[in-house]
Image (cartoon, rainbow, N blue to C red; front, side, top):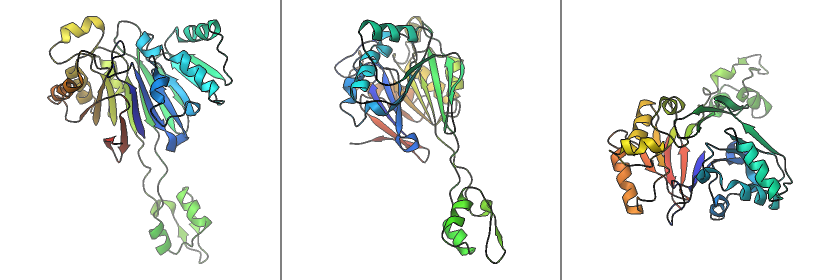
Length: 314
């Protein structure tokens, strides 16, 4: 699993940070990627990556503020121009369907692929054999969702050396053992799958939170996840300034990660008043509460491997 930030700023674009957009790369898991929020010029940011819009499968919108949705019409249209033909599903709060349909209709933007728009409530909003996505209301100045993405356990791995030592020949019997089936050898001996396979492998988990004050819903969505992505529009000690705007300080983001027992925190939605050399000060402030913090930057990628989160250096 990889994460790539296309926009990490708050409110409006700056020279250093575009508006909100985050990609969850699932190329190995399902051959697609998912997008969380789509601020203005998101498709421009994609031009600096290896992302192909036709591989975009799902878009999750946290709320209806412009810095989270103004990039949608252009991206939807370009996906069609770029030979995107597979269905695309957009999840978001009430109003997202009317806004998209009206914009496409008035601009006479015609899509050559099926577009499904689901206005969601709290609860599980998507589930298949591989993933489950849950949404909860956060505490912002307008309705706003956070999302919890869970990869379901992966199949056990075959301990092939052990199976061969027990006399299992190379071929279809090994595949049966890997798939959980017991097999009988030519000598009549039964080899049990559980004896030559590992336990099911735990999948990854991520909490992607929209704009929010410190709240219990954020903690619940982030419970025990590998990575929580939390806005940090304000710096430490400015909680009373942040509250009227429905935002959080870096200290509050770190408290959410700590109280939810998350493994890693990426702070996002950084105000333009923090220059690049000042962004690390936010991280230092957050480290007073939580030990594993990264600062999101436009186009920065992260890889989750063996439970560890690391930036991908290009």
